[in-house]
Length: 262
Image (cartoon, rainbow, N blue to C red; front, side, top):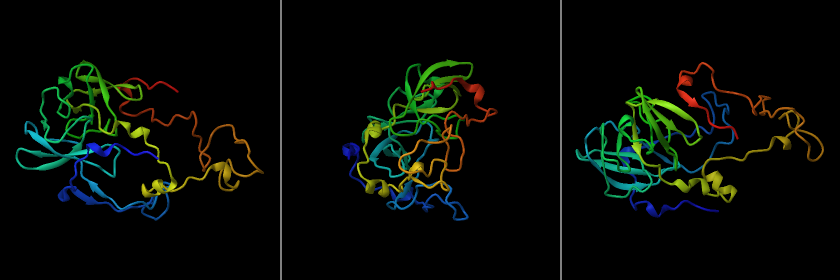
């Protein structure tokens, strides 16, 4: 079993006005039926309200704490603006307590600052990137995530995503400089079943271990091959090699290069 490096976190309690209690639905819809399997239980948590928009332009702020967030893989930073207001933001890698931050149309090229995409030089790494100005960051928000600025042309910024996909985004949108914190999250080994239960993850039963009535792979004496030409879900829906993206999706023309296969 391995854990993240929590030595960078501050020894401070969360800011209560920015906490919210979320009801656990254990994967059930408004009729009480399970629509997402393998969810339930887990420790009770308070949700930290993260400011993905950061609309206070040209108001300096400094980092008060770096904290753990039970609802996300990245660490978060509590910042205090010059006007006294506090908010939580995603903490970039390398951010430290008492560091100065600012959100503006054009800022110094310093980790944690947030600015318009059109003013960020080519080759820089950014996170919490907006598709539409003022809507808030929508991509590169998980631990260790970042996108790379490839080009600036005709009102669009070309971004290279972690998947290898290259896409255009309006250069009026904002992005934060740097890579999201806790970059070694992908190296964590859960280690034991109980730790998964603490996270609210319930056991997953293999289809081949079920009866024929319960799964297309079920039944047979001993270990059996799949018995169906294409991989399928519990409900017989094809999963492997089946395209799920809407061919009429509005953002299709903005994708310059699809992510490489394999």
